[in-house]
Image 1 (spheres, rainbow, N blue to C red):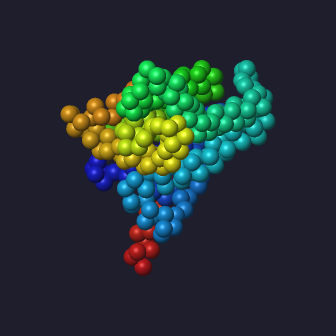
Image 2: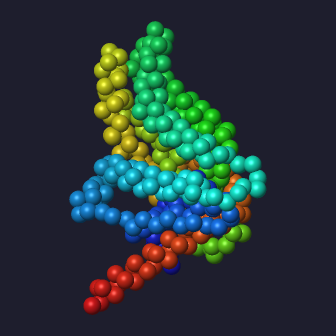
Image 3: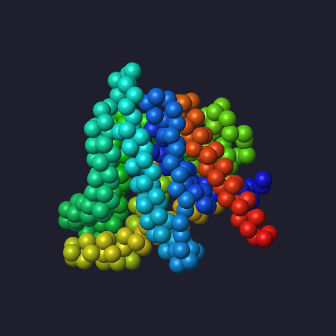
Length: 311
């Protein structure tokens, strides 16, 4: 299968597992405490209106984010439920069921606050405090973006210190390795996957960083004074920044094989050095189980569609 014909797959890490998504299905595989692997499958559902919106530049990014959040939360819930329902005695010291639930809840709350409050508003107020020194609009926007970047890196570093998130980041690395191995046309074995890079141009981590960079340029088009106007502008421009950042992410992925343009995606790859960790062979095995199950379902669906077309 040529590179052009090869379908595009994405995914995300969940608690003790990996979710992969294709054109027709999403599949999660989770390692339970008894070493068995549990699966969760969701068919992709869409409407003619959603399909139309996903073809419109700058709008399709918002639609993709909404769908990814909705689907991803269901797979994440499945992964935590597997650990909650597992009654197998643990042979090694592991986080309690309560701490696992609290951990996921805290990360969810922190992510919301970070995205809606910390990531959008606090940098505005911090930058405003420097206005006596940096009075121009351009200087204010640059200072605001620097504060956003500091908050982003600090947040990722802090959550990465928790044992559960460290393991999630390892599964995140396993997810990228499987996709890179597949896209390179190599046989999907643990050895080949482990030899692949844990960084990928289409990663959501890159998208988050691009929102900071894109936001800095978008904000140059609107006033920063008075403060209330600045705050309102930042809130209203969130969809614009997300839509443009998505297009930038897609563009950097398309040019990643062009020598003089591949560097455009490097900032996102550098951030992934924090959001991914090297996985163990057992974790890669789970990621491969998820991906192979997805490939099986996708293949069966495509064959069914071809058969229906021939009738």
